[in-house]
Amino acid sequence: MTRQLIFGMGVFMAITFSWSASAADTPFNCPAIAAQTPESYARSCKPPLTTPLRDAICNYKPRVWLDDLRMLDTTVGVSYVRDLRAAGAGTPQCKALLESHKTYEKELQGCGNNGDCVLKVMGNWSRTLADIEDRLRPPLDEAALKKFAGGIKFQDGQQTVSLLKRLEQGMDLYPLPQMALPNGNVLVWGFQPHNAQVQSLAVVDRQGAVQLLGIVDGLYLALPSGKTRWEPGKDARIALFVRDPAALSQNLSAIHAWAAADVLGFNQDCPGKDQARCQAAAQIPLPIQAYTLNCKAANGKIIHQHCAIPLPQVPDNVSPGLFWQ
Image 1 (cartoon, helix red, strand yellow):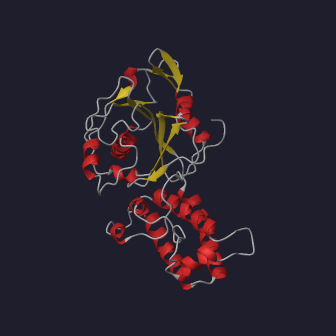
Image 2: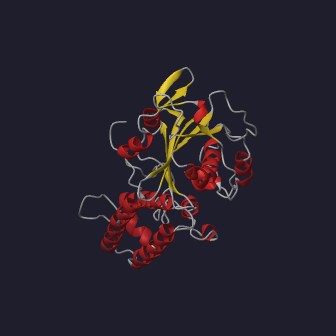
Image 3: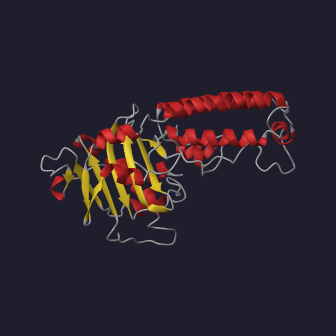
């Protein structure tokens, strides 16, 4: 991965505009809201078109660049979902996004079947969402990863592997999923193309400063639907690398939840209908090992087992459902 890493949320998810009453029961939980909202205002445009707004979206023919408003309807929906997932749960960013969207919905509904009005309001909201996404995305790039990882190498079986290259191997995807954490940090992760069993993750603050790096193998979808037990394979692992041990205690709860979501394939609704499976996944003994990159015993910047540090005891206070895609 030689290009700059620009982190965002994946678009392979439901398109949404308005949040449902059931989602509102969890205040300012933007990922939950994104997971429970309808596909778009226009839906499939199949008759009957029960509202003037749906009629405008499905039938109005703008004079510029679009056959109809459905393309813009979908584009705005994708952007809104992406921003919802990036805003996290219980964050100021989530609250501000929801309040902005309520204002947008009021303006849009006020257009009725006036296609020119719908086009203008949707266009303005699309540009607003792009600005919001830029603010939500932590400014993490390859230079930040390189600065944190340095020239560190680690033992990978019989091989000595560059930590930076292995991290990039598991992040060769765009846009990368990200999630705002309850502590204010952002967890960013990715996959190797065509091999989801090779993953990497990073925890950064809102300024893009790296707090923690991780490499993950043999975890994704290890507990598919219908399977109730998982025995980690010999190659399964979560290796975490820190420079300040405090970063481990501050972020380990979220990494536990992320790992539970990972073994379920990031497609479980919890709290919700999949709560039992989420709880079962959260109880799986995870193959986690943490290392300090400031290990004085490192030989030629090679991290060995004696650079391992103990895992702190942390509460299970982050739901795997936070990482629903």
